Amino acid sequence: MRRVAVTGLGVVSALGLTRAAHFEGLREGRCGIAELAIPDLDRLQVRIGAAQPGFVSEERFTRAEIGLYDRTTQFALTAAREAMAQSGLAVDAELAERVGVVIGTALNGMETVDDSYRAVFAEGKNRVHPFVVPRLMSSAGASHISMAFGLKGPAYTVSTACSSANHAIGQAFHLVRSGALEAAVAGGAEAPLTFGVMKAWEGLRVLSRDACRPFSRDRSGMVQGEGAAVVVLEEFERARARGADILGEIAGFGMTADAGDIVQPSVDGAARAIRAALADARMAPDDVDYVNAHGTATMANDRSECAAIRAALGAAAETVSVSSTKSMHGHCIGGAGAVELAAALMALAEGVVPPTIGHTEADPECDLDVTPNVARERSVAAALSNSFAFGGLNAVLALRRV
Image 1 (spheres, rainbow, N blue to C red):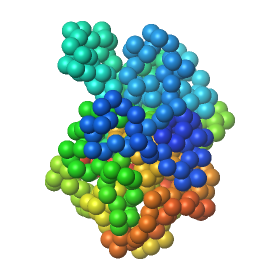
Image 2 (image 1 turned 120 degrees about the vertical axis):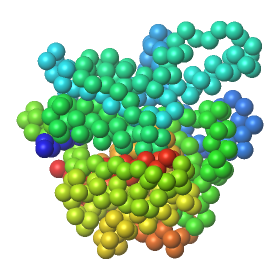
Image 3 (image 1 turned 45 degrees about the vertical axis):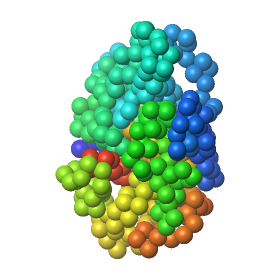
């Protein structure tokens, strides 16, 4: 099996429009959650979210491109551009067929769907934009990234609810490690902060009306966020030979299904995914210094995830640092794992564990070191990034510092 290096990273999140801005927000423990500015906000009970207010489409894309790209695709392309620029990967005609694209998204095209329904039903129009279908198809982000960079290897979308991005990155990792590809552009994107999506999630009664407080005893639910993150993965020796700046190594990937409840998480399913990632990476539990938790701030997820980390890591759970960065950038749904992988890469590269902000009172059932409120300096040689989705779909990435 070949080793797989991360040579590029791009991020769009509520904390900033670049990886540097995202990292700065994580280090500072900045909260990107605020009242939303969307149509019909007064009809919502939950009016907060982690939006990226500084993203202006016209500053990044032509008028013709904006006609083709939903906001989710715009995020994915913006993150991919930054990742490819950092990687310095030169794709010639021969290499193009050996570079793929795998992008995760759960709700692609929601801005387009919301606008189109509003036009037809609320405004009484009989026509919608001619590109509604290509704008909202789930594969739009992967397709446009492949076209933007001339990447002719396999390109596809993975959609597994809130684990979509981790599944996508894990699939890309497998393709490069196996030798099927020399490199891959992978990640996740989501733009769910629309009236329709917010109203749907209200129905589940899992959204907080005031803040995202993972692992805190007084937590009141999750907060929706928008954003994207994309990484460039390359065969390790090839990347080193060309002098690439290696940000970290994807060392292992584990995925499981709970085969239980459609919304209730399973300790066993999550723990098996963590163990599978460790086994794939040939890591021992005490090798892990940091876990970027799924950490949604719902009662069920936080308690079951802490129990799963304890079950999988055993005694090593006493010394591992854990945090949920969703407390800062919200839950980016299909893009969550990628935005959170960026936090794990920061911990490896900079020796800074990002905090879980909003933590006011310890929950005895979340009895891990959850890095409350303030980032912590710590040497991180190995990290895990957890994603656990509705439907019992679990995906965990294992990373090493290079």
